[in-house]
Image 1: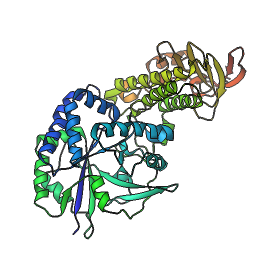
Image 2 (image 1 turned 120 degrees about the vertical axis):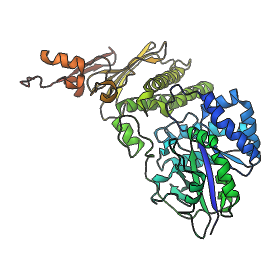
Image 3 (image 1 turned 45 degrees about the vertical axis):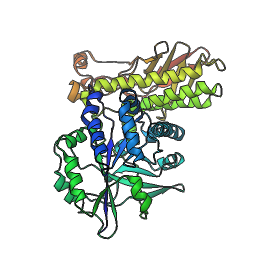
Image 4 (image 1 turned 90 degrees about the horizontal axis):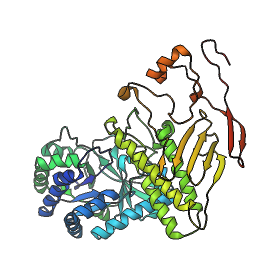
Length: 486
């Protein structure tokens, strides 16, 4: 029987954290793990840190960074890169993907002395087009949730490889056998590794561990017990991905369709097959995505001061963090709202860096085009003090930015029946027209979904748009009330 190579991957996978004490998490997990690894050189580990957490670690616990650097020099640990601000990688431009990855890669190399060769994608938000960006960044392999692979086994025993536009990359199935509610015993987990292992060739099995799961593993001495079992066996070795890939060739090719892990289930969403499907179904996420793409185009068109452009890019990247695009649990709705506020703030700061540049001095823009990529025109009024975006859908003012404080005053969240007792069936923005029958008005005040309001749900038509006078006239025709009067 071949050797079973086991790799443990510790990831800080995004979740709205609410009041989670990062310092407490460090003391209960990372610190204890580092102590264990330092005294047990045969136990190898792979780490994924996203950019802001790495900054926090270096600022508040330089001793941990020093220990990790020493463990790296002993080839006992390996580090994975990713998008610095944890963006949804398929939704940002290739240049931004490469820029964010290289920013995190540079910091990992500075702190730990080695350049990462692999990447961790939170929630396996995957599209094949990512391969080109990853190869441009000098990466050799990707971790993806094992459920995205076609084989349905408890453990997939070998990595695969995939090609896109002539670029090849290794795909490593990542397994999630642990839960915080119930951990398998070291003995049962040890035995389960043999179930799907190759009987003749070496196998490689990667195991995902979250900080909360690690806390339980450390608390119960699980790691020590598992290490003892491995030391007594000739068939299992704890390793890191690079060590395995250096001595083993990946031969099997597999295509992974655009997908996400089933663990990625945003609040008020049953399931999604791909991140773009989610984007199309969630107008709040689509609005932020459209804003991000528009600011990106402004930065790309700017040909002035390179340092100003670089600063604008940094603000843009900070606005691309996935926390502003979805809510995982209604418990963290305030954190989600704050993340959206921060995203819009950084987008406005990026936009101002370009618009207020001395060599451009763009003070006023009045234009119309399909801004949010919904097949209909939107109308943009931008000046030195504010931005106003108007949509034909409902004839609403759906974004109002005051540049003095970098705030979007139309940043709202749709209410949900289960959480709020009221279900919003249209976006609550500004200048929403209503025509409601008198007997329906009381119902509307209690629950907007029970009213006969019609204007927020229809498409308006343009009757006049004067760029020079900055005037826009819209109209809508509907059938209203019990007698369906026009």
